[in-house]
Amino acid sequence: MTDVKEMMVEVGRRARQAAAELAGASTDAKNAALKAMAANIRARKAEILEANAKDVENARNAGKTDAFIDRLALDEGRIEGIASGLEAIAELPDPVGSVMAEWERPNGLRIARVRVPIGVIGIIYESRPNVTADAGALCMKSGNAAILRGGSDSFHSSGILVECLRKGLEEAGLPVDAIQMVPTTDRAAVGEMLRGLDGNIDLIVPRGGKSLVARVQEEARVPVFAHLEGICHTYIDRDADPEKAVSVTLNAKMRRPGICGATETALVDAAGAERLLAPVVKALLDAGCEVRGDAAVQAVDGRVKPAAEEDWDTEYLAPVISVKTVQGVDEAIAHIARHGSHHTDAIITENDETAEKFLREVDSAIVMRNASTQFADGGEFGFGAEIGIATGRMHARGPVGLEQLTTFKYQVRGDGQTRP
Image 1 (tube, rainbow, N blue to C red):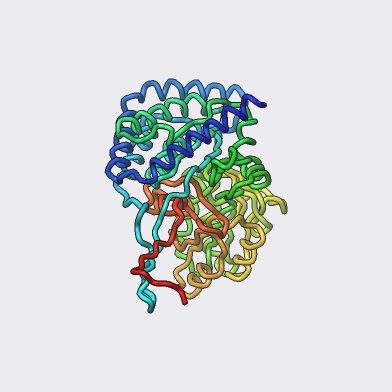
Image 2 (cartoon, rainbow, N blue to C red):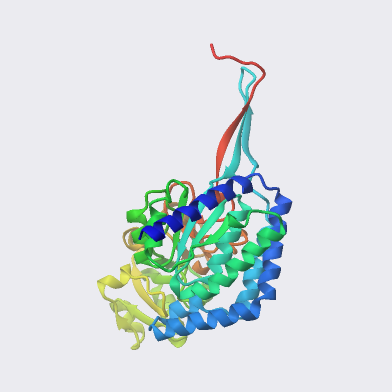
């Protein structure tokens, strides 16, 4: 334990020093690093695939779920997506130093609120190698040092990716310790990060399953950006277009069932159920999705399984969905408030008034109209990438991109003013 503590404190110390250097780095240097990182990843594609194959094999042997394997696995397309994502971040405006607001007081003082880096950010995540690149790159572009603690399941894949990122920093003349990977799979390292590494971590971002995020929120001695789970809803209103209801709900559930933005519960307005319920349920079942429903849902197709009370509170992360009929938008909003996780919820309707009520009253980080919940993603929002989805109410909410990884300070310019 002492060895792990000493090792992690040293990681934190080097990160703090790198963060101080990086805070003043030019936009050109940061963008050059990102482009070099992307080139390094492409150049080492074969090595990354070989390392990832080891990780996937180990995960299969350990009995991990298909959803877990899907998040872990890389192929040529996903590696190119990682590299392209880094180049996309390079094209985004640099938030550091941007003026959020400025004004002049009657006494002549000129005050500006200016974006600055947070400092050192610890990212604790599970089986997603792409998070290694996204998190490291977003932290660096926003002037922060990153300490990456990926799950042991992706240790080989993430290790090579971090080498590519650090080489990019070196090629651009930036401090390589601005991106560090925790060099051990010992879980004691996570505890040290949660304790703050002797004051060297300013923020923790957990990205993974419910148990990981719950532990971080319970034990962290530093601020946390987190979402506990993604229990996302799609509400099909009585005024929904049937074709949109089918296509959007099917995509929201089945495009990638294992991501946090996947719809887990569909709510159908009983007043429109006669024309909307059966087509949606049939499409889901025919696509290979298990449907668990209330009595009205079971009545439209014999393949529907009865829903238990706990289904309304379950994040399946699999091709399973619970479907319930509700008495209009008010009951849908009440159901989401009771069973949702404040992540992403959508309404399908052609009624503007109903849509605006839903968008206004559903208290989630992301609320959508006539769109798949799978758009809950920083890249889809134009952020280039994301470090996660924050479902709390402080500082950042929704996809956490470059701007959300900064804080601000006030710069006050005077000309000899004194306070009476």
